[in-house]
Length: 490
Length: 103
Image 1: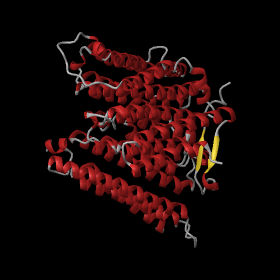
Image 2: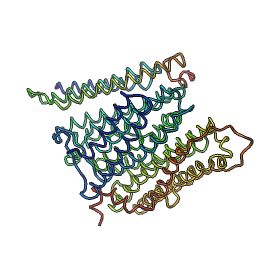
Image 3: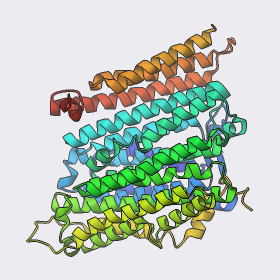
Image 4: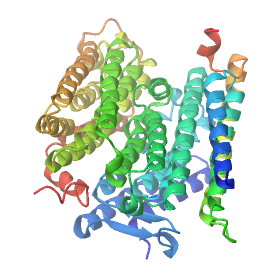
């Protein structure tokens, strides 16, 4: 019997290899078929977890500690579903985007399908693995596929941005790997769940965890390690930016949360947690202020990622030595934000790609008249923007609500101030863009014809982000299957 | 001093040398060499861990990790070198442009 968790990894990996070998003009469609299959298995996985609780799969019949276990709980299922939906949407969008000029030459565009599927496989294996070394391999696959995707169209900006991205991610990986080696030296185990049983607050464990955390912070682009992100995400082709900003940065955050909150909760002191929260807060402010100043659309959206990643790290101080009810609120709120931001940000980047595709540039001044020329994209952009700010009924409204109630409930009012300030700032940069988009057009602009389905994909993602707040009960229930803190909450 | 401590210290020194080289060299080839030295330091530590208890049969898990780690490091280095060559073809030097301008 093949398990769904294995299939979600195997399908895109095998599809990627096949697409690479076959080449040719039909490979994008092969990619669509394969990623639809991966979406179906992710759905199947979610149903299994929903009905029967968290699942452990031993690969090849060799269980941990010697073998590698896959472990899928509610959080993993939600992440897998999110990844599958966004990857499939991006694949559809890419069918149009890579058809003409901004997509580069045919030879270069051909590289998209295999790399997109490899990235998909890496994300899936990261979200369903519980072995710290296997997670290292998944992180590296993510980096290799992500960096290669940034440069498929080429150009000087993309090359230097990709190099910065690769250097930062490579260094981050090595810090993480050193931490893995030290953990193994200390405990003789690699499985996160076995580690959580023996976890002790020892000095070597703390050194190992600190190295791993700094490495992962670099990969998540937490302030002050964010410098590589905006240019890499802005220089990449739009479908790639959507995957990198929407999904890839979340993967390393997910791992930080698993490490600290699930495996080694005793090792995190209140002061260290406050420091991590402070970095998150600085990221929110810095990213938002930069987003207000940038002159090109994709750079605004990329800086907004730096800001939105900051919110995720507020989770850490809110779960450290607070009452279980506030811990659970912060945990669910943090991951609801991951979910909502992934859809909103993917949609924003796809809209930016459509604008770039139509007009050949994405300067903010040239957005004038957009609402008349590309009404559907303007609509999608507006909705995704609203979801990004966190107005009801969007998913990030709910996420911020949970984070706020956790901050106020646990008497850490300063994080509530940060969340409020960040929300106002994100409102400012989103409305700055919309103001230009709704301004009357000046003169005639030449415009490339846009395939209608490209606009529809970005609209669909924006609508998911907006309506995530409406089906919150079901999503939260799935998210909280075997989550930490659930049992402690009365 | 036991062998394990000696290897551990050697690993720490190599890691620091690599980190220093990575942060302070401008040339991309040097940066990549420095990253590989950092990687080597982790492999030294893992090798020592596998033999720590001086048992006749060393622990195979860290050795498998070294093997996989080498494969990953080679792939990442190969990709980075390919990008570095293309940057050199574009800008004339294997360095990141903004940094060369600020010299």
